[in-house]
Length: 177
Image (cartoon, rainbow, N blue to C red; front, side):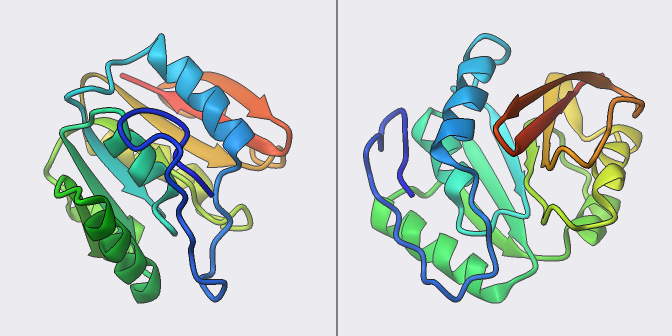
């Protein structure tokens, strides 16, 4: 996996094979960031990366000028890897935190400009992610929540749904206030 844009463009990230992850493909990531470039200002944004895994999206947001990236995952080895990689990048705006995503959302009192979630595709609770974000009012004014999912998941009837974009087997549902 590599960082495809911004300050760290071209930097390879080599995750251990034993992490329980499915990183977003470069093709899908490039498509997403092309959309974001015309939708929201990443530079200066406060970002929340849920189910961060290897930190693939965390590094991309940091590389493109986010002012802070809070990365949440319940797997200690994922968090340890993100912490290590952020150190290697000398990027102190990345804050990895080991936490259950749903418990974090239930207790969060911080607003974010961008919330990105890349849960395991087989997770039954995927529809609850955007619902919690919206009901807890976790987006700043003009903020954006993006949930990555498979084509089997339909979030189009959820509150705040704006649009769906797909890149092969990767689907992104966009939500805002």
